[in-house]
Length: 139
Image (cartoon, rainbow, N blue to C red; front, side, top):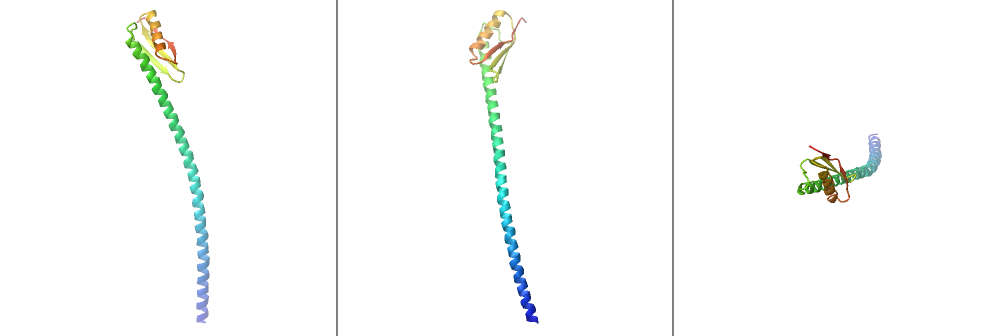
């Protein structure tokens, strides 16, 4: 009887090992499959995030370039106004809108003649820009 019980125990253990190892293989295969699927999903999401970041960076770079170009234009016109002795340019403010390609002169000058000269100077030094003269005459 002892021998029969031992043989049954051995067979039961062997069957348990076989069943357990099959279950482990199935679990391992499922885990591997899940990992591959999740890796693919993560790669897609990472790619989308990278595309968004790239677009945002390009947009920010373009805005910075536009601002730099507008600043350069403003400095060019203001420098030309200060260099020209026909115009009292200390009270002239120059603003540049790169999006509308507009240079705006604000402030005041002592005469209509200086107002016209300031507009002429701004036009000469702002190629490709429209000049809007909002200067007032007087103090």
